[in-house]
Length: 207
Image (cartoon, rainbow, N blue to C red; front, side, top):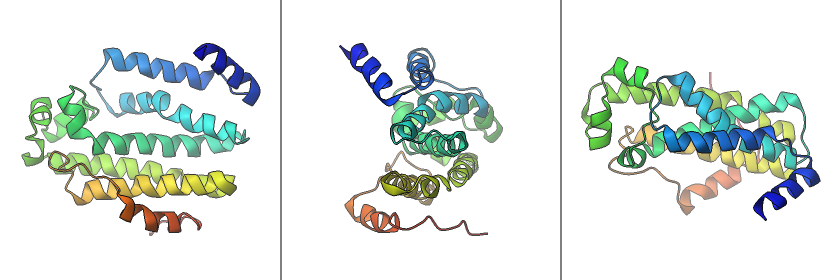
């Protein structure tokens, strides 16, 4: 029944099969891989686990412009990465580490330290995470134009999603990336100003 319903939805909304294939590929990878060698590997995982969602949403709202896809991909990857840094402690306890091994080695942050919770005390942890946050923030910026390009209800929802993701990244940075003590999250009080801001175009980045 699930596959019949999916086939019906794909036909009704003219959804391409590639995003679904990418998602299935990422799901399969999750069962066999819990470490990533370098940044390229992490981005490839995000390309298949996060980006297809944005592409399908655009399609469901009737947007088929190829020029929108890189913007959507940037936001989706940035959101996935933000979640990785937000859930660093949770994932480590489950045996999953999304921080690339090559970057961890360069900063002297060991797998054992991440899994034991000692990582925030290492001198290289903060610089490592600042580097990860800078890369993530750059991806948010690359997708900044998307809400304005699509407009309407989807534009509002994308602005709210963009603002919420950026806020989580900022809160994680403000906490010194020590998510072992407290996992940054947005409560009702935080969402109200974001809802108001989402009613207006995203501000241009400060130089």
